[in-house]
Image (cartoon, rainbow, N blue to C red; front, side, top):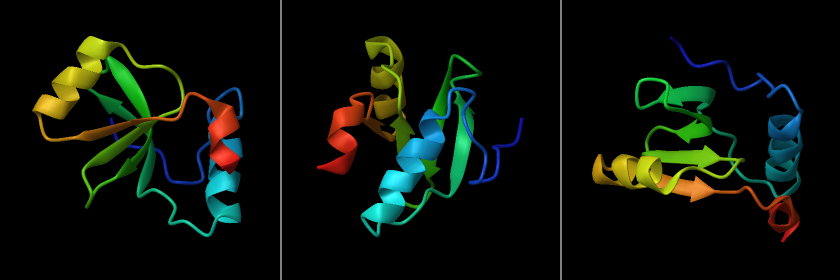
Length: 86
């Protein structure tokens, strides 16, 4: 299943809010959004391919996070929306 283009938004709009925070801070947007991982066990809200980084805007189960880290991914948990503007 291909990743959605960067313009894709999560159903609750969280991804759009996070992308707006990225833009406000002048940071680079992700290469892809809504990326299924671990055979669909989770969906990363954003992916930075070159940095092998996955961003999750909802809490991720520790076992899935550990499995992704074991496969060489950096897993970022941005589930605390208050931290997006700091």
